[in-house]
Image 1 (cartoon, one colour):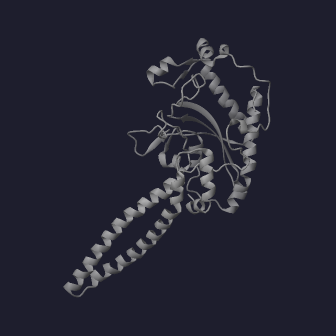
Image 2 (tube, rainbow, N blue to C red):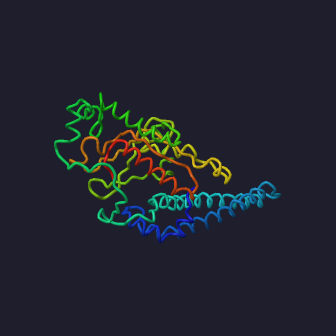
Image 3 (tube, helix red, strand yellow):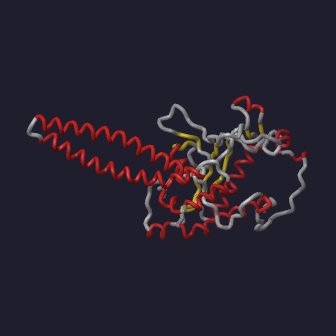
Length: 332
């Protein structure tokens, strides 16, 4: 459920968070209007409830009228009420769309320990593994993989377009091996494995807050990152991350305090395909297997009480460290 009242109560924080995270929507002006529109929505909802009650009473008058004039007067009043309700319902829906649209577009709240600002403000918590080898064009992953027959970019471009690829031979085996390796580490620590659907309902993705943002080539608008499916029985998109269908496992369910004590945390590790339609900036740092439209991803996802959130996050971090350390990668 979307806690609009909670957003309004902490509106100054959200304004600052929007500025610090540099999102284009919602704007500060829209956030200033949020409380006013929400109050209008609540007042109109109350008015409509009262009017519908009056509509029932007038309907009873129509049925019980003993004279023609009395019945005609009641019918006229019933028609006026009906028209009023229809017009105000449209207004109510407009207010509801505005309020929830702004609230849904708010970025995630920022962790209190996160530095704000450019890369130099970042704080290195720890470093691991061997010292990184200096960059060299001789170790370009595209030329190495193509020379070893591990990837096909040109054929994929002919079949689908840019930023798609075939993994073949050792490339396909390497992806499978890495996925299985990451799964095995998570399973060893008690995380339940899942494979997830590639298609999800659009509303589920939006309710999960999946809103990656890119600016289009003119710099004037944000780009829709979803691949939308046509000729389907519902409004479906391709999943941008396995986290969304994993969250959907427990959508519209209510857990009691006893449930959370006995069952929580519910720890899941999902293997899924991630589909992203954004192209991004193209250059030597984003060529090859970077900024592609489809990739396989292993996700750690947990359902837990708010009090245990930080502890689960640290467990996720520990698992990631174990995975990278096992591969002998330098990382920080």
